Structure formats: structure tokens, C-alpha cells
Amino acid sequence: MSLIASEPFNSHQPPIRWLGEADCCDPAQVGGKAGNLGRLARNYPVPPGFCLTADALAQRRQTDYQETLLHAYALLEQFVGQAEPGVAVRSSGIDEDGKSASFAGQYETFLNVRGAGGVLAAVERCLHSAFAPRALDYRLQNGLNSADARLAVLVQQLVPADVSAVIFSANPVNGRRDEIVITASWGLGESVVGGTVTPDTYTIRHHSAARISAQISDKARMTVPTATGTAEVPVPRLLRRQRTLSDAQLLEMAQMATALESEMGYAVDLECAWHRGKLFLLQCRPITTLTGTSQNQKANH
Image (cartoon, rainbow, N blue to C red; front, side, top):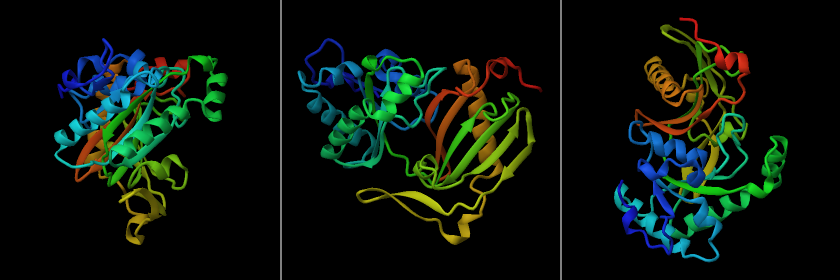
């Protein structure tokens, strides 16, 4: 998506970086979340989108970043072939998704944002979340200076997920590197993040596709897109205790996790979505809960 050249901005550095472009890989400008996705977008099924850089946002009172942002959203409309497409507007902290501090859940995400005004408002709310009490407390607990908090903001086409899932390329509970753990539930991932639903849990042994264990939960709630955003609704009764993922889907996800672990050089924590039978990668970060021993432990083949 080579669209950067048409961006209006009074700076030598483009304020907008498109996922899949070489300049969207620098975490010092686009943060850990967007940097990882920018690096992986060329070879993995990452939804299209762009990132507004931390420098552009830090200077937002002296620049025309809003015009630039709206221009980028208009280009995204053209790229996906849809007027006012629903997007996910996500904070991407400069020190986020590191090997020691992931910042998971500390900054704001807004799903199914539509229209120029909605995108502008969501970006501003993401920026304010960098200085929310929970984020500042998290920085303090992890030995990070609050004065250094800098955010970029990622805007991506929303995947209206039939199933949302999190994949761990190593078992985050017992530290085993020969196990892949996948949790999944119906709809968008907000219900899982908010703790209002207990997802299904699947465990897969590396290099042993037949060895899949499944713990199927009673999934009473799900988050779905609406005309004005998202809503949490009851799961249809027939789906509540139904398995969310087939063995074929689980194996496809396990293969992606294994490939990404090899490419990134560390055990990965992935956020994914399935829509109409297609798998999408929404986030890739290190698993920060593994102990030093388990991080270095080789898988038992």
C-alpha cells in the first residue's frame, strides 16, 4: 500500500505510515504494536491500515495532523472499496509490547469506529489514555518513567470476527515450550478482554497434530458490531456450548504461531480473528509471563 507520498504535512518525516511499508517497522515512531504488524503485514494476513506517528501526535497542536489523518482515512476507504469503513483505532505505545512489559489492556482501543469525525475523536481518546491512572500505575510498577510516555495510534480496517482468539506459542501457565495454547470465543474480542465470558481453551502439542485437547466453556455473551459501534449481546443458545474452532482451524493457527515464533525470535502472544473462514492476524507480541528458564527451554519433540 504505497500511499505515503500523497500525505500533506509540514514535516520532513511522513506522519502517516502504512502497514506493510518499510517505514512502518520502527517502534520508536509507530510503537511496538504497529511496528510488529508493519513488519509482518507483507507475509501474514494483517488487515490493511495506517499508523499516525508518535512525533506527529506529540506536535499535534502545532501541525495539521487532523487533515493528514482524514486524508489517510479517505485513502483507506478507496483501498477497501467501502465508504466510511468500520475501523479499529488502537493505541500503540512506544515502549509497548516489549519483552518485559506488554502494556496489554492499559491503553485504549475503539472498535467499529466509522466516519471522519469518529476517527478523529477516537484518536484523541487513545492519546489521553497514555496518562490515565491505570497506565501510569503500570509504568511505575515496571520501572518506566511516566514523563517518557509517547503514543502512536493505529487505524485498521475492522475484522467483523465470527470468532476471536488468542494464541500462545508456549504455555503461559506452566511454561512448557512444547505446547501451544489457544483461547477463543464468539464475536469480537472485547467480551474476552472485559472478562464477561470464559473462552474455550485448546492445547496443542508441537509436532503432534493429533494431540489436541479442548475445554469447551459455556459462552453466554459475545460482542458484535452495530451501526454505532459495538454491543455485548447474548450468545444464541445453540452456540453457547458449541466448540468455536475446528481442528483444521486450530492447526492453521498453530502453524502461524510456530512460524512467527521462529521469525520474531521469542515466544509469541497473538491476537487473531476468523471471518468467513479466513484467519486474520491482529497483534503479535512477546509472552511476558514466561520465566527465564521456560523462555530458554527447548521444546520436547
